[in-house]
Image 1 (cartoon, rainbow, N blue to C red):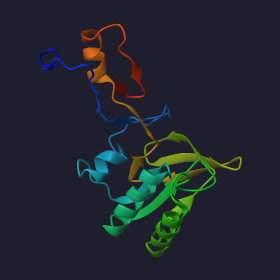
Image 2 (image 1 turned 180 degrees about the vertical axis):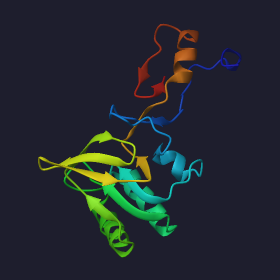
Image 3 (image 1 turned 45 degrees about the vertical axis):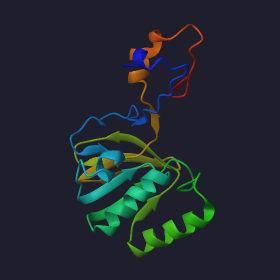
Amino acid sequence: MIRSCDADKIILATGGLPNLPRIPGIQRDNVVPARDVLLGHKQVEGRIIVAGGGEVGVETAMYLAQLERGSITIVEMLDKIAEKTDPARVVQMKQMLVEREVAIMTSTKVLEIKDDVMEVETNGMKRELPYDAIVVSMGYHPNNQLYQEVKDLGDSATKYHAGYGI
């Protein structure tokens, strides 16, 4: 189909896939990507830990809090949540999180996910957080599958940059 278009250039905009970092125990049924929760593919409730406090993680926590899915805790490695988000918007986000009693743990690293607890470290102190579900929001990487399938269709000048084939 691509060859039949006789195009000079093709732009692949195939989006990204959620990162699943190499955390011991992350491959569990009750550990799900934020994308799956936000798209309605997975439902979580009870004691929910959102691992990752960037914009998507905070928005996911807000979404779950608004639905009253349970008690929610955001765990973020950096010293602030939503670090790359517009500061005016962060103020509104934090206000909503406070109103909905969402716990926020910054400067906290996830060490391991066990059957019913997540082991974390904050300022050199380890502790265990009980959970029923963990929502992972630790960034995205390019979805390169289609590029890999079509990269040899063009000439040798074909270039690839961060998820975009040109």
